[in-house]
Image (cartoon, rainbow, N blue to C red; front, side):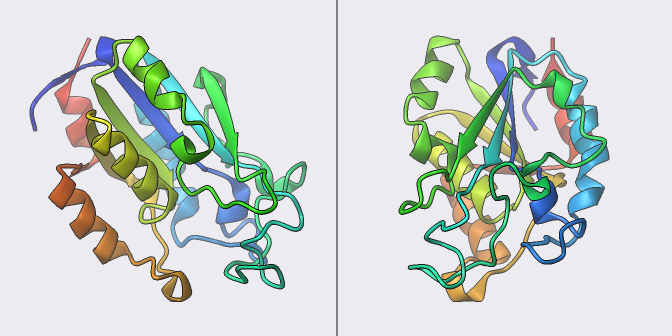
Length: 201
């Protein structure tokens, strides 16, 4: 992997929340969600130019929930509930900015940039060239934001062991399908060790 300069790079932690873990089994648990905390914390130790996090922040009647318009998912990460909290043990004090998304009842927002279109311009204005993406779920919100950022011209890596995925057949969201699409776009799938080894201060 080619080295990257931390002074021109951002770490984006996507939706690393209790509602996507076995801590909230009635919500939308992603297998292995709790195991990503330690790798993310290793990444958080680096002196990135920016460290951003996204946070699903759904109203109780969000359109994607069962019984609502799209009828895809059980209620999860509902605002101001334990499911919306970040995973325990995650070093959230390292986050520079938390970007909430999915708060419009009638609009879904897998990608951070869908809810916050100015995010891309913010990164460009900060001199960012490289984005490292990790979190939940690898093939859903991580994939969509990585795809958007890659299409915007950034070098993008998806840190696999600091992420966990979940196939959702009813929505056509599959881990292998997302990986193929991402790699065709030039998104690099890397491990935490590879990312740490390529980082330059």
